[in-house]
Image 1 (cartoon, rainbow, N blue to C red):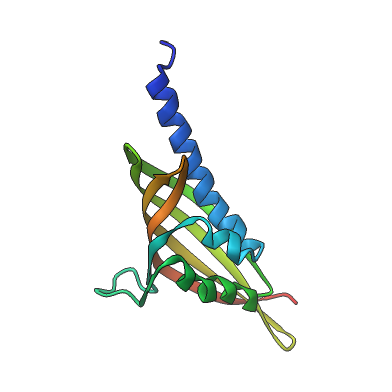
Image 2: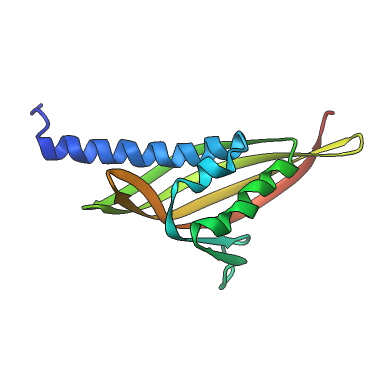
Length: 154
């Protein structure tokens, strides 16, 4: 096995940084750190949500980092969340990249003495940019493939 060249190490570092970005997004969501989550995006970001991934048009589109605040703050309506990241792929092109990552997002709601779990099966289609040595989301498409909701023990 040949040793890595500096360009190989740079690519590995970029791939690791992008995976850490994807994981930081999930961690911020689960810890209700809306400001930290927003900081993972460029100022002029575009966040596109398809509540049904088969739909021809998005459910909504948000433009600019500041527009993300209410969406991320909405996670506080749940008693608990857990985002579990799965496989991902990344294509690098200099200071730009595209990626696909899978996530199973768990959301616990409480209504009186009833507790429910909503599980969303999500794919994220990302366009990323490296700014000042840091990878950020330039565009993130959240594609909900399906959800399931069921009662859970209180």
